[in-house]
View: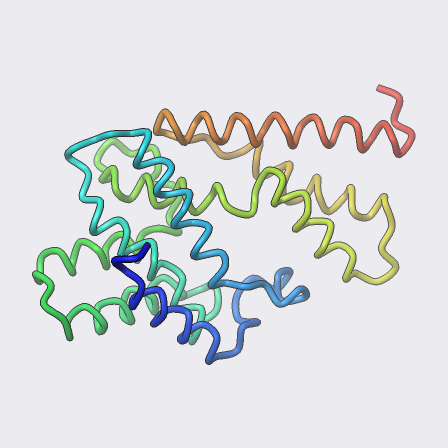
Length: 211
């Protein structure tokens, strides 16, 4: 992270200088910290890269794309945040000595990172797969349990039962639907999924479901 400190600072200033409530409406209820999410995704990306040990991976492009992948939330909500993020990143890089082809690739990674349907297509660059996996690993597992509880607590008349329903609708369903591609991504996701499944089993038992 040290070598990209100025990029992190730039993104942090962008995200904190605008309305931090742009984006996912459910997360707006808890003033979700998009910059903190960016830092966590970066760390997940590094974990995957370190375990992959793939010399063909353009790690520098991947690092920059990860740093800028959600900066567009500063000016745009969910619908077009990737487009805004890519535009902001392009403007930043073009004012510095970066190769135009590398800039195009970085912006491509940012622009396509929400398109999870690309995850399993054979033509998808590994860099994009890693970015998408790192993005999905955040706010899931233990984090997802806390996040869902936090959001559900902001609803009218929250209860243990309403938290359970919210958890089943979001984190549990998300964990069931998504499948990963890289070996380290699969392992991290497997660990998170096991935690989520066991948590829900025990939580529902505590609520009176004796199965």
